[in-house]
Length: 254
Image (cartoon, rainbow, N blue to C red):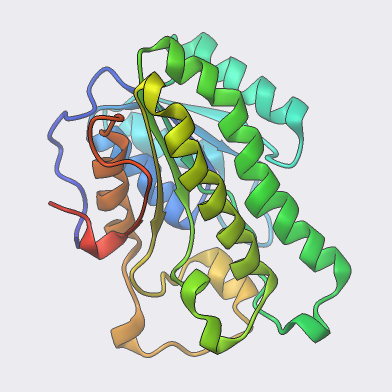
């Protein structure tokens, strides 16, 4: 599924909370959801430009300047208080939440024996515990709307056991287990729960910062817009549709 999502209005009236939306995949997903008609809470820690380019304010301004609705909301997914405050601010602004895109993440692809403990813990804190915290915070609000969609962004590296182990893949594997279990738990609440992984490598600002300078052949690279297209499709689901799956961006039904 390549290309930007169509401006179809398929998510008109919906509210999406996108964690990790200041750059890369999250930024493109936030814009894609807005183009499909959703109001978007653009959530991340990046309020000012830092070492890696991108801020929540720039993303929100891009959406509103194109005629969409967006709120920039500061959110540190490793802090329960920060997550709860960000969710509360989003509900106060938009009246509720129908969709969660749990995208916040950090990358560490080094071998286990040379991984500092602080890097291991950071991957688990952001990539796994962060998903747990934002998911926990939004479930009551999605349930109150009569259903909706939870989407966690993972990686195609989870299944690459022949290529060794690293903190990033391990943390994302934990997310997939969490969401596959939640799908069964939340089915009676009409909430779809899915994971979404790129089909190929998405070379984002964060990937360049944490990818160890690896060169990727052009045929293995996927544009971030493909993830946006797939995320819009999953965002429109409830428990009567696609749920309890790990989807690849370029294999989602059009």
